[in-house]
Image (cartoon, rainbow, N blue to C red; front, top):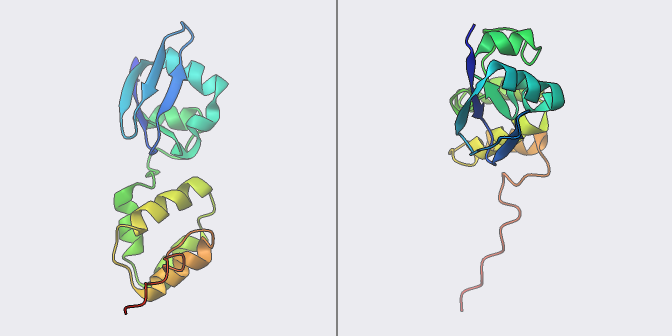
Length: 149
């Protein structure tokens, strides 16, 4: 097991952590810091929600994540952009089945962000709209076009 662990910010916002010795780190979106195992254990003890399910910070040492109960298995893959794209590219029926198993808001946010960059069919957009009614997938909030004179 490694003495240092790479901690990666998986979200689109900065995440600040303060170590036991008072040193502070601001982890940029998509960025990482390398911390001592003791520092990771300290952060996990005071703010376990940062690591749980890899929803904000991801430990690159998967064994440590399993030991601390943040993920169920070393083989659990995080829901990253590539994986979301693959699932959104499935048939509409399979995509709906995949969406039915997702309820956590941070995962839905990630799906929305990726879907906004893709050219999806109307059926898939409708399925996404049904799953996330507070989001605008169908362009309903677009202002009406100005009439031409």
